[in-house]
Length: 356
Image 1 (cartoon, helix red, strand yellow):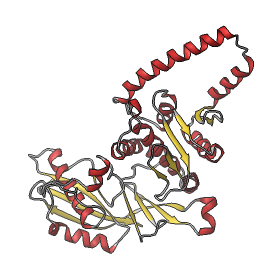
Image 2: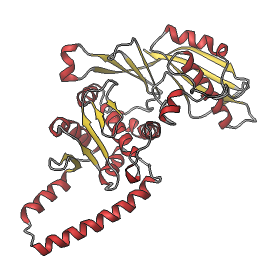
Image 3: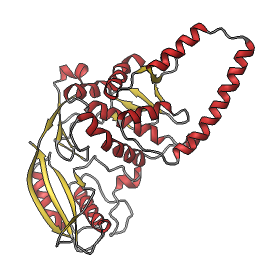
Image 4: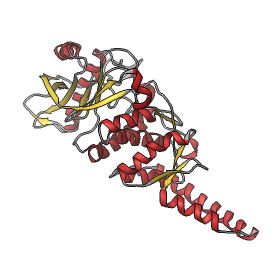
């Protein structure tokens, strides 16, 4: 189920927007805080107004609810063990709302990071999300659904919660499915760059085939319209580098010096790392090399460090060490494509691009 904690009135515009974008009419139940399909909520209210229960009827109803709750708990354990398939935005919402054994909990609030903060009760900045939705149709819905799914999937049977990394990884995978459907352009968020160190600063979201530029709004507009103005930008290729990577494991920093220098010249630039494989190699080996180059770039750019106490051959990042696998996805400047290209070079091609 999807539960809104506190300030139900403040979050209702977000719920209504999600209903419009997904075609699933939604309403916040003021009594429980649960987000429900609108017709179901109305049916429940009418039933409560019209029905008069005897003491025996009430006892029987309570027995039925207990049985349903037990069935839901068993179903929830099965659900938590694996089915994370989402094919459409509607799938996502109906799956979360209809699951009585697992829940997503969110509450409105202002966050240090853009849009949301991972927590047992996910904090979402409603004004920011609605603001970018008004600028780029579908973007706010994608962000909101990412956060809802991330919180939902982090809640495990027995009251346990997963680390941020696995929950974020699942939300990134879901976002890859719903983003083209809601925004209307192919691609999904794979990287992020920024200018400056201020809390609210220019950000560029790399969406694979285009960028979304987030520019801070004037202070006097932020309370009403959110902190960021969103615009879609084309990609400008700055330079391509083909690098031969001699072995698996950590990459010698000298190999990537030219790429790092180019990216430091353009703080909003991101790096698409494409694995190159020899004819006799499989994609998995080439992807390992590409991941090693990507992580070496992240370390060289000062975005993260290698895992504390790790061996010199280990490419694990410190954030992944602390927050779990997937914690580093879509939040750094370099990213790896999902498939390899056949080449006469065992290595990678790095395309440095920026918003136009």
